[in-house]
Length: 263
Figure 1 (cartoon, one colour):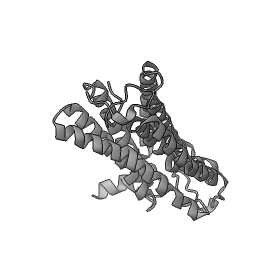
Figure 2 (cartoon, rainbow, N blue to C red):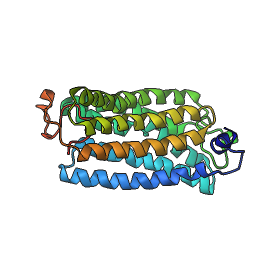
Figure 3 (cartoon, one colour):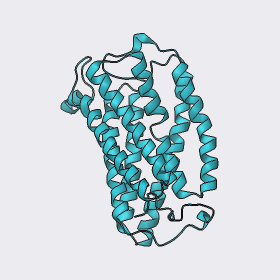
């Protein structure tokens, strides 16, 4: 147990192997964005794939900033950018992609327009909030450096949106495939996506207690599971049922509650 704690909660100023984990997460993000864009190109740039690509891009931006802070040191600007990319944009674009997959285009437009108001407001606040320089740690980012602590209260609303549509949508799809007994590969794949979507949130919650290293682990493990789940679903047979409420959508390939893009 002491060995585990020494890795997850290192002495101040002492970099451990876990501090370099965001580098691997960033590289994985780059590869995944490329795969999503390649897929989107063959699917007429479907909105759900484009939003997923945007989400993974900002996922990678957040971990790239963590890598930069670890290797070269922290600054107010880097810490501010890290909070914006991770806390504000960490899961929202991924959830929006799921919204465009699971709902009709019209409903997805409405949900996205309403939620973007909150995201844009929170983003503006993050960029204008004063930073408490005395709380800046040399090689570790932290959210408590924001002097207007009420700004941090905006992130739970954005994260709840991400949980409901990204994790909730994947869990619903997993349960549906599992109960019907059809397409076992998609049941497993959507289950992996749901688990992968939860892990960064758990790590983020532990960051509030000063354990930012738990976030690094959750980010890497979460993205790895999302990748595995996505490719499992892409390679699985496509669902045979078409959503009735997708009749007003201009993307005829959207399938019933698949949770991921159909093969």
